[in-house]
Length: 328
Image (cartoon, rainbow, N blue to C red):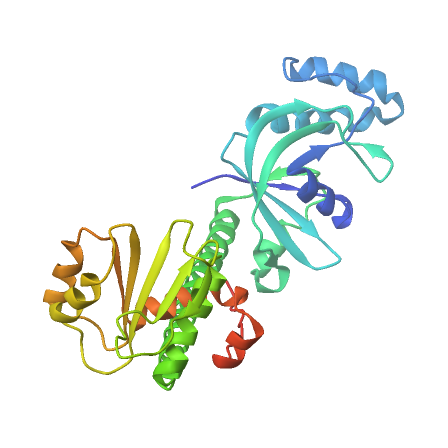
């Protein structure tokens, strides 16, 4: 079981300082030197010299420094109390004793420190047993908790952690369900578009990606529905040729070959089928010497989500969507 040390913090006033500086600290700023290599007896002499009017307290003060410098180990826990909020903050000691002469708070120096990683979730005093409350009512600046109190504190922290993990998992699952439902609604909305609107949607996507895209004139040969390039004239690579099939049935290898048959080797091709593709169609696309991307409705929805912010006003009227923020 880890050790837990209780450090009083001036009725909680030091808690913001501890959190901000990621440390715990002792005052006695008249001991203006590194004490790491001094014996307890030597520290007593220094304390007596610095605080002669407090001779009766010297022994107990020296014991605090002995614990703070030598007995507290990296990995030990430290507990401090915020009386204003009536809760305890638990941290883990992460560094050896340091002398930090510039460390100050509330107009006073707190030069003797140990680096500490603080738990972000405090422990309410109200949930502690009466026995532990009594133990934490000590007037000592620094003391070690008894095993019974240590076990209770660690148990409470572990329970909190389990609740946090459970809560995070629940949020993750809820978010995933919301995202899946939103994606399905987006696909429903896409399927409601007519063929001409689908071509306009592909034009919007390519424009949002930084190309200049246009629908091609309608005619007897519908092998090319949208054309895009960087300059809008097709003089700069890449030249992007898009065919859109907006129907329920899957596209097969025959349709892929027909589309590719009128393309040039320098074209970059996209075949959109909201009904999906057969296995043979996918194989035909893989073996093509002309670069070809097959886009089913799932891939189309993902591309829309990625580039929707760049859609024009007309594009957002065509497919109105609203951004939703989810908790992490």
